[in-house]
Image (cartoon, rainbow, N blue to C red):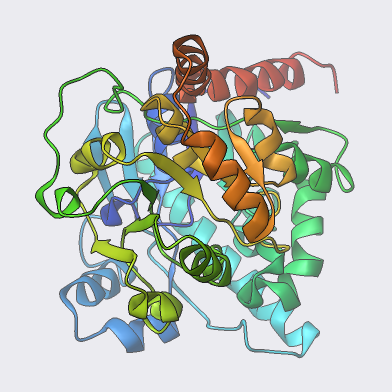
Length: 403
């Protein structure tokens, strides 16, 4: 078997077309600087077809699943996106393990049959490709059975098996998927330690962040909706979800310090929409903003925060927004978790409302310029190139180790 890497195949959780900021997308672009890359969208399942069939996106996905269109499209130099020509069974609700395993294997075969067809179209041999699986634990279980790549890597960036959707089947399937891989990569020490229980090669490769547009010293115009809010402004920028953010903490903080103005920027899911935060006079929801607008909002916020809820889903999470805050030179307060300790001493870590009040009071003090520059340098060092180099080092070691 040749040990020359021909291409990378990145099995993703999110569709490329959605254009969401995701580690898989960033790594695909980084890998494409070295080798050809195929980014593989998740296969559509029967339940999703029923829900989306009346939408333009749903109609397009169904056509591609039936092979009626271009399933593999070149989107950039050295980078293709493949949408699987298969429809998966919707089986997560099944409690019968034997039936679930049978249908999951059928789903995996359909997925990898489509992938092999796409590889042949690009004249790639599976045995010369490296598969990088972005936590697609159910499909990934069959990577070596149905695709037989040169190497198979499994990537963990969230503690997914604590999420209700994944918990029942994922808690038994993910460890097996991890065991079958050649190496495991994670974006935090906590997740790498978890994977190491099931695989001896488990490495924390850190996290990349696109910090180029977050320039602390560039001239910015204060956004009109933010200019109406008095100082001090304590802000959060990102998706507002009750699964990951501590709504109760925010409510208590706003009520305890009515002289502070809590600014929340980003789309809201239902838990935030229904929260008491909307009734508090010193809490401001500014809604979704375009990515290019965010640096200006951060610049005119006095203290940036990440009021993370501590649970099994979030405890190992690496919040990318911390790098964005620090790159903007902002005083930053965050909930203390194992993953956050890597940012010390550049952030103030806190637990509970009293801890947050003390941390924010400290962060509101005048910044030391040397400390600010050190924080900016810390954020700017977290690049996708650095993450990829750690992956390549493990890859080379595996390829040059005699069987």
